[in-house]
Amino acid sequence: MVKNTRGRGRGRTASGKPNPVDIHVGARVRLRRTLLGMSQEKLGEAIGLTFQQVQKYERGANRVGASRLYDLSRVLEVPVSFFFDDMPDEISAKSVHERREMSESPDPFDNDPMNRRETLELVRAYYRITDPNQRKKIFELVKSMGALQSGDADQK
Image (cartoon, rainbow, N blue to C red; front, side, top):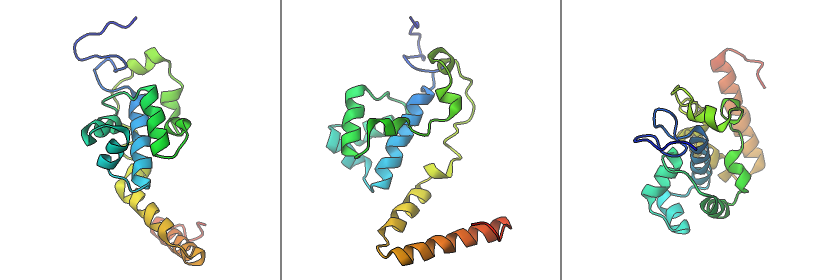
């Protein structure tokens, strides 16, 4: 049994920071909500929470219980497993005790372009293009521009 000391609640790291699994689940909630173009307020209304509570879930500050995770999966139209997909090996391979004792390294999600609002908005806008030929041309244009920037003109 883990002793609950001040600043170190259930599931928290040794320094009192949120558990990395809770941070990952929250990031996946935010990813899916943003891809759907849903505000925190609308998500909160759909599951009976305030937008501040949704914010806390998305940051990993509050843990998401099983029934709430089920509600989120229904509203966000994904299976529950979605929230655990793409979990970094350095998190998923550790035991419960090891995760609680993890050193406070920088959050691996901070520098991930897949977690930036700009990326999510770009993906949503891309899929709003209804003509598949236009969408493919945009895709090829962006790929070629990225290849030019990186100096790899042969990148496909």
